[in-house]
Image 1 (cartoon, rainbow, N blue to C red):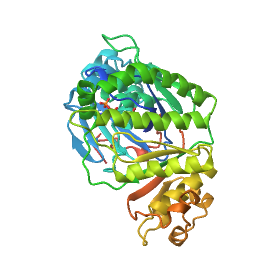
Image 2: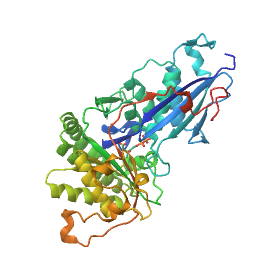
Image 3: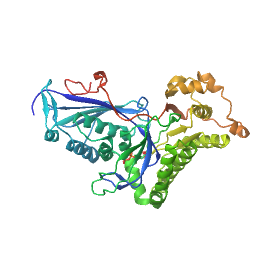
Image 4: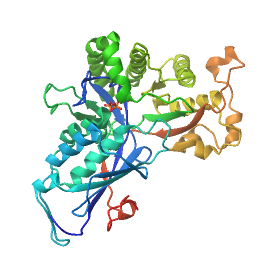
Length: 419
Ligand code: DP6
């Protein structure tokens, strides 16, 4: 295979947030989970990875640039993912450019890969899920892979478990599977698309933190090895919750959805505490946000909000509808006001229309917020200025998309190196 040509594809793949948590593997190499999980895919416009992959006979080795910095591809996870996707490549021909690639050539050709996230890095939001899913989706397009999204999700899973769920939009389940040798049937399926539950609002509270968290890849095996509670959870609790959660999502039953989501997040963090040495992912601010949602729900009588936390201190909140989202935001801004010089429009990212719903135009409106009625008896309430760095307001979103605009590609179409 000779020539100077560069063949290139760019794709965007969204992040996802689980509502029934994946934590722990029964097979570390194949990334087979100890229990099933359910997630919601987040809107691409607010949280996604963009990846450009290129192939050329002139490339000497596989190379990766993440957010502009070259990273090593030597880990087993990258190697397993790349080997698996290469084996699925098909013949490709472009007469105009004089490119002809046969199936078997994919094993010899090298890739250049550049990827970045559309949300600030270093916040604990940059999960590996969108990144690995985007890598697999973009390479599958480049190599003319014929697999459907569920089949592709088994390849993304080899990079990071939660990545398999990002290949579908809307509401997604990662099924356990029975193929213990190859993991071929442990894939993600779509339960409902992103339009199914349009009332649902997602508010992410990015919590200020200096603490360096132990990655899921390192933390979960410790829990598997040391927590008896995790095994009880996987066997006795999650299977029932999966059935109930599927039903709640299908019937848009927010009360059940909220109850299960909060309970499962709390139980996942309880298994982290049951780990030796214990894993602490939430901090005081995370706990205070939980209290705020719980108090609001109790006061309203009917659940208005729900929360879930991954292996970090950021709160992922769900509101029943826009009205509930406005109530929730007012409360959070009351307890955690930003510093007085903050520009509100850079404090609430994503869908900023929530500010109007909450009757907030500028920082003065935040200062004037009254104490929430549910805490009247505790006034003066404690407030924690600056403890939330910012919010992202989003919604359930669609799955992966191809980007045809060459201007958005991260690699130069002539050299195949980062622009
Ligand atoms: C807490 O997918 O990051 O976010 O498979 O080891 O890469 P690896 O772990 P990862 O785990 C995510 C765990 C979680 C819960 C979830 O997403 O379900």
